[in-house]
Image 1 (cartoon, one colour):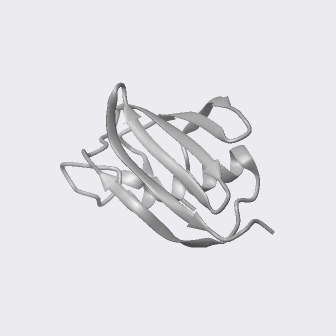
Image 2 (cartoon, one colour; image 1 turned 45 degrees about the vertical axis):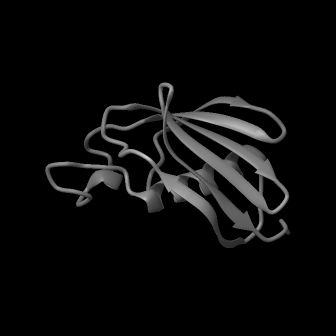
Length: 113
């Protein structure tokens, strides 16, 4: 399981935010891409699901992905914030570096057990 360098910033009943510290030696950057590392989209989705469950409890089984947008690369040492919004059957996420939206998406879920 990929380590998550996350610190909880705030949490409400349906929304949460995390600060992510992206050290250059973070395992997620290995091999993606040598000499020009970026945070893979699959890692971004994985972290959103895992941190969503940490913030809100069991979300339900993964059913698929709704719209995803990867607008700009996320690189080592950037100050990154992940915001999450939970609703029945969905977890929405956004990754931002300061005011700049880097990626966003919707994770589709079956009902929680």
